[in-house]
Each structure stands twice: as C-alpha cells, then as structure tokens.
Picture 1 (cartoon, helix red, strand yellow):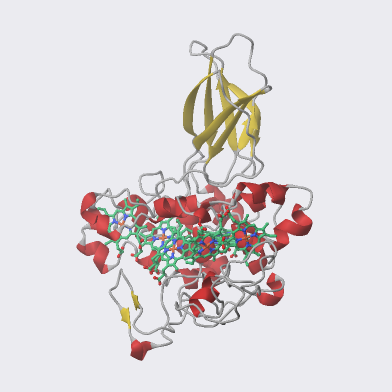
Picture 2: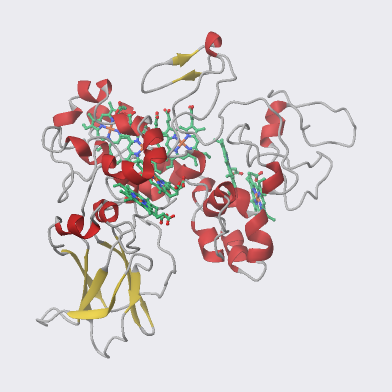
Length: 421
Ligand code: HEC
Ligand code: HEC
Ligand code: HEC
Ligand code: HEC
Ligand code: HEC
Ligand code: HEC
Ligand code: HEC
C-alpha cells in the first residue's frame, strides 16, 4: 500500500468546533489522567469533538473534551467583547483529552472556550479487512452487522426514517458518514467504527499513533445506542439497557475500593485480587493476559457492558437448560431438542450452566469460561456457611442457586441445601 498517496486522497481536515461559555466562579478542579467516554453520545463513539467538563482550580480552568482520536487545539477568549481567540497549550493527542489553562486574570468574570479537532473520516469495515480479518470475520456475524438490513428493521420502515439512522448505521449526519442505502451502502449497519470512532486515517496509515482508533470499555460507548430514547412506535424493540445498568451496582467500582486501588497496596494487592471481580479494566487485562492497569484506571470502569458481552464474538454459549431461551429479536426458541445449540448474543460467558464453581485461588488458576456469566464473580469462593471470615467477603449467590451452599447456619449441621437449584 502506498501510504502517502492514500493519505493525500483525503480532504484537508477542516475544523469542527464546539464553543462553551463559562462564568468564572465556583468550579472545582478535577483533573483526570485517562479519559473514557464519560457521556453517552448518539451513535456510540463520537465522531465530533465535544466539551465534556470545565472545572476551576487555583491555577486556572481544567477543560476536558471528547471526540475521535486525533489532534485537538483548545482556544480561550477572556471575555465576550474580546475579538481574539487565544490558543492554549500545545495541540494534544488522543491520550489526554484535557488541559489546564493558565491562571485566570483577577476580576475577569466570564471566559469562553472552544475546542477544534479532527473531522470524522469514516471508512467502513471492509477497509479493516486487510489487517484485522480475524476480528472482522467474527463481527460480521453478530446482530450488529444486520442492524440496518434485517427484515424486522426494514418492516418497521427504518431504512428511510432519519430518526432511526444514527443508531443503525455508521456516522449518520456527520461529514463522510452514512447518507442513504444507495449512496453509502458500505456504512449501513453497526460496524467497527460505531465503537472505535472514525478510522479511515488509521486504515491509510496504521503507524500513526495519533489517529489510532480508540479502544474503550466504557458502557457509555454502548449506551449511546442501547437506550430507550427512541420514537414511541418502536419503543418495544428498545429496552433501556443503559439506563438500567446505570442504576445497578455494576455501574462503577465502589468508592472505598477505588481508593484502595489507587492507594499504597493497590498494585500489589487490591488490583490483582479484588480487581478480577470489581473492575472492568482489570478483568479485561486478566482475560487478555495484558499488563494490569494503574490504580486510577482500575477504578475507572465497573462491570461494564463489554465485561459481560464480548463485542468481537458471534456465538459464545451453549444451551444447557430446556426451552429456556427465546431470542427476542428473531423469535427463535431454543427447545429441548436443541440442547447444545449456540445462542447468538455475544455473551462472554455461558448464561446457563449447572456446573458448580468456587473460585478459591488466583484468576490464572481458577478462571473457567464454561461457567455461568454471573457465577464468574457471584460465587462463595470456597467459604463454608459457618465461616464468617471469608476474606474479605463471600458472594455465595450462585452456589445457593445450585444448592451447594447452605443457608446461614444455626450451628446444627443439617446440611440443607437451598431450594433454588
Ligand atoms: C494496513 C493495516 C491496517 C488497517 C487497514 C487497519 N488497521 Fe487497525 N491497526 C493496525 C495496526 C498495525 C494496529 C496496531 C496494533 C498494535 O499496536 O497492537 C492497529 C490497531 C487498531 C486498533 C486498536 C488500537 C489500540 O489502541 O489498541 C483498532 C481499534 C483498530 N486498529 C481498528 C481498525 C479499524 C476499525 C479499521 C478499519 C476502518 C482498521 N483498524 C484498519 C493496522 C491496520
Ligand atoms: C460493539 C462494539 C464493537 C464493535 C462493533 C467492534 N469492536 Fe473492536 N473492541 C470493542 C471493545 C469493547 C474492545 C476492547 C475489549 C476487547 O478487546 O474485547 C475492542 C477491542 C478492539 C481491538 C484491540 C484489542 C483486540 O481485541 O485486538 C481492535 C484491534 C479492534 N477492537 C478492532 C475492531 C474491528 C476491526 C472491528 C470491526 C471488524 C471491531 N473492532 C468492531 C468494541 C467493538
Ligand atoms: C451505533 C449503535 C450501537 C452501538 C454503539 C452498540 N450497539 Fe449493540 N446493537 C445495536 C443495534 C441497532 C442492535 C440490534 C441489531 C439487530 O439485531 O438488528 C444491537 C444489538 C446488540 C446485541 C444483541 C446482538 C445479537 O447478536 O443478538 C448485543 C449483545 C449488543 N448490541 C451489545 C453491545 C455492546 C456491549 C456495545 C458496546 C461495546 C454495543 N452493543 C454498542 C446498536 C449499537
Ligand atoms: C438511540 C438509538 C436507536 C434509535 C434512535 C433507534 N434504534 Fe432501533 N435499535 C437500537 C438498539 C441498540 C437495538 C437493539 C436493542 C436490544 O436488543 O436491546 C435496536 C433494535 C431495533 C429493532 C429490533 C432488532 C432489529 O432487527 O434491528 C428494530 C426493529 C428497530 N431497532 C427499529 C428501529 C426503528 C424503526 C427506529 C426509528 C423509528 C429505531 N430502531 C431507532 C438503537 C436505536
Ligand atoms: C470472586 C469475585 C470477587 C472478588 C475476588 C472480590 N469480590 Fe467483592 N464482591 C463480589 C461480589 C459478586 C459482590 C456483590 C455481592 C455480594 O455482596 O455478595 C461483592 C461485594 C463487595 C463489597 C460490598 C459492596 C458494597 O458497595 O457494599 C465490598 C466492599 C467488596 N466486595 C470488597 C472487596 C475487596 C476489598 C476485595 C479484595 C480483597 C474483593 N471484594 C474481592 C465479588 C468479588
Ligand atoms: C453482569 C453482566 C451484564 C452486563 C454488565 C450487561 N449485560 Fe447485557 N445481558 C446480560 C445477560 C445475562 C443477558 C441475557 C442473555 C440472554 O437472554 O440470553 C443480556 C442481554 C443483553 C441484550 C439482549 C441480547 C439478545 O440476544 O437479545 C443486549 C442487547 C444487552 N444485554 C446489552 C447490554 C448493554 C448495552 C449493557 C451495558 C449498558 C449490558 N448489556 C450490560 C449480561 C450483562
Ligand atoms: C465481573 C464480575 C461480576 C459479574 C460477571 C457479575 N457481577 Fe453482579 N456484582 C459484582 C460486584 C463486584 C458487585 C458489587 C458492586 C458494588 O456494590 O460495588 C455486584 C453486585 C450485584 C448485585 C447487587 C447486589 C447488592 O447487594 O446490591 C446484583 C443483584 C448482581 N450483582 C447481579 C448479577 C447478575 C444477575 C449477574 C449475571 C448476569 C452478575 N451480577 C454478574 C460483580 C459481578
């Protein structure tokens, strides 16, 4: 591939600009090192720069923003009447999407910020094939790749209804994004760039670290589409998954544990042990065999969508229960005669399994992908009902369900399993 030639075919990047007006009082400093998508944006990973937070500290303002990978430039204007925008700091790459401005002049009561960043350059998933074919050939068979073309969506007149397109296509409404089925067929359906952001510049020049697409476990990436804010006539197809998750204890790492991750014994003790069940980023690193995240990063993501749903898998678990499952979208019911059939919902662990499970040792020795998704974390960890000191706690829900963990004991060794099994 002639990289420089390919790159020249893109239009010169024009600036997309977001302007935010700030009144210079009462903000708190809250700088963060790694940026995850903090707010769900329609369509998934944003293709446009957006300012997500402005806080005031003793040394000035900390401005954070989000958007696709690429270089950004922050500008400031001290007052409404000033004619000039002043560039602040160096144009910064995708890693730190936040900057602290110099101290604000005494007596200034208002200040304006503007961020300019890369314009989206969408490519479509066939451009990824050359280098990411194993991922592509899996993802092609997930529900995501049929989001625009499947019969149900067509029957609901989704293909020509603009209110449906931001979540069922790539980059609808943005420059270089989806327009319609005949002009931009390569951008129909939910694809790689829905979760990773525009990636044409990366496909043309994968060596460039600045335009390398984002990889983010944050539930906000999924939440931009998996929410209940849809036209009423199609509400039945759109359960408010993100809203529900957002009010569950899975949505973040508990405050105490967050402090432990970032504290003195974080990397030696809390991250490798507690992180396996309490942190989405730690669990991902353990599963992938990559190095464990830092304290802050370990506390940044709870049990997110991607912790339970593997975006790159098509069929992950076997049916082991009878007639348990109806696929809501296709109506396909897995019945008795179809034991062992695969579900097609990208779960990262089997939903239904009767295999008992007690994780007693380290993740490396105990992890078993054949175990019920919830049981991966909600198991007794080898504690007995009588032991009140299972360090630091036991979560015997799965074993209770299976009947292998007794209800709390009165001292009589009746050995009654719970009835749930
Ligand atoms: C010409 C080869 C090539 C093409 C085409 C290509 N990539 Fe990549 N991609 C790479 C390389 C090389 C890396 C870096 C791998 C690494 O460092 O581990 C990468 C990394 C990535 C990453 C991970 C970034 C990270 O921080 O881990 C994502 C996501 C990605 N590519 C998405 C895409 C998408 C989406 C497309 C299609 C629009 C695409 N790539 C097209 C070569 C390519
Ligand atoms: C539904 C969202 C989603 C879609 C669609 C998706 N990804 Fe990903 N991708 C993720 C998430 C989440 C991660 C990080 C967790 C992981 O590795 O599974 C990731 C990780 C990656 C990585 C880095 C780590 C790895 O697993 O190699 C690459 C490269 C990548 N994706 C490329 C692609 C390409 C290419 C496509 C399209 C063929 C694609 N992704 C489609 C969500 C998605
Ligand atoms: C651009 C919007 C969009 C984004 C971003 C997105 N999804 Fe989806 N997702 C959809 C649509 C639309 C469907 C319905 C597809 C269909 O079956 O037609 C869907 C279906 C699914 C399904 C059912 C798939 C199947 O094979 O039956 C799962 C699971 C899922 N998404 C999980 C995720 C996760 C996890 C993420 C984030 C990592 C995510 N999605 C990001 C739009 C999105
Ligand atoms: C906010 C993003 C969003 C909007 C807007 C949206 N959808 Fe969806 N749609 C989704 C997601 C996400 C799913 C998967 C839901 C799930 O399985 O939980 C989905 C699923 C569906 C399904 C069932 C699965 C399938 O076959 O695709 C239909 C039908 C559907 N949408 C039609 C529509 C129509 C018609 C519109 C416009 C009137 C629309 N949607 C607007 C995100 C959206
Ligand atoms: C095998 C998985 C697993 C490991 C390892 C684990 N936990 Fe938990 N933890 C859970 C589950 C599941 C729950 C929620 C259910 C429950 O309370 O039984 C929980 C709940 C908690 C709670 C209560 C949450 C709250 O907000 O009240 C605290 C505190 C806690 N764990 C701390 C820790 C600490 C500290 C470690 C490491 C020393 C740790 N956990 C290791 C799975 C685990
Ligand atoms: C703790 C694990 C867990 C988390 C976290 C989680 N899910 Fe799920 N999800 C499940 C299970 C279990 C099912 C049921 C699968 C089934 O019925 O076969 C499911 C079902 C789904 C389905 C329907 C799949 C289908 O085939 O119909 C979608 C879509 C989905 N989840 C999206 C999400 C999104 C988006 C998030 C984050 C906001 C999320 N999930 C977070 C475990 C999880
Ligand atoms: C990756 C580990 C993990 C997985 C997988 C997991 N959980 Fe959890 N779950 C936790 C942790 C950790 C907590 C406690 C969070 C906190 O309070 O800080 C928790 C809390 C809960 C709670 C709240 C308990 C309470 O006392 O308020 C419920 C309910 C729950 N989980 C159900 C489920 C179900 C159902 C599944 C499977 C679909 C599941 N979990 C999968 C780790 C997990």
